[in-house]
Length: 421
Image (cartoon, rainbow, N blue to C red):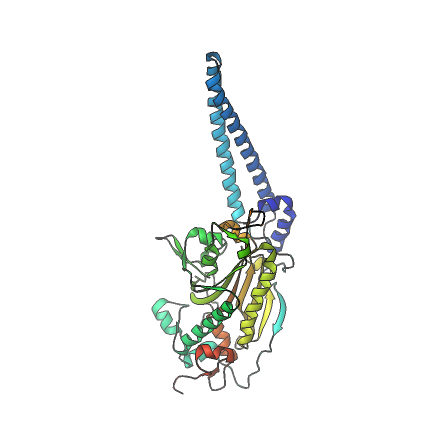
């Protein structure tokens, strides 16, 4: 949720953000109008209520001749107060509804445009040239006894899978490696709940344009999370943190669930686009003034993981129209997938400024004793999808896969061999 006070001071900032996102600029004028009318209605209500109280006090002191007139006036004022209060509440609800649909203000410097208008900031490593025809991750995974999508579909349907044998060991090793890196950098490890209340999901901004991606359990009115960003963001909801306790860095390990609505026919082979996966997610509560630098630190930690796994990748600055509701700026790291001849997203890190904290009421106490909304940031450190890039980039002609040296202590072997070799 954006700051109404900041909107009043500089409405052109939101107008520019809406343009960059491809959103409706007229929303700014509607917000300003509703805010002005709400404040006027509130002032009228408070003025009438003060007059009502004053008249009420006068009744007991009035003479019999004056009392009847004052009682009549008090009755009229009571009706006026009730009407003014109702109008102020109606305008407040309308303002909140419009405000809830406004995405975060884009950080200066983010590219304008939509999904294809990202900026490539850097390419790291050189895609490998094979002297044999490389196999894709599913063919490799099946030969290694690591991935079983057929039985996943039999048990649960399309876009589900089993990780078996070395596949399970590879994922556990990858996630443990990410967790240990984060802990070494001061993160507190967390295994959060993956079912959350509507107010938690709403507070993180996921019940807007992408609500159809989320699994909902109507009988319990709970949502399955698509990222542990959601429960971690809600961890300090309705709390006031000590200023010297920031930044608070959490690293969450959770299964994640996504309906993949609208992805019919896309990435149907293998485990690139699936309904369930595991993820290690960094989440930070920060001072707003430090959020930009913290965002760059999260990106650096993501890159450190990719470097350790010796994967060629590129860093992209996501365009404003593809940021999602909560992010003011987002950087993705995309790894090279040899059999697709292109880069695919492995990590994403977002600076959500104080947008989520306003919705969830997460504040910290400043030196002057006044509470202020914190900034929130998130970043992926490892997911199931990374297995795709590891298998394809480190494969050998005989179908075996070399485990990157940094990952070997966590997997317990140097090479993954095809089953039966």
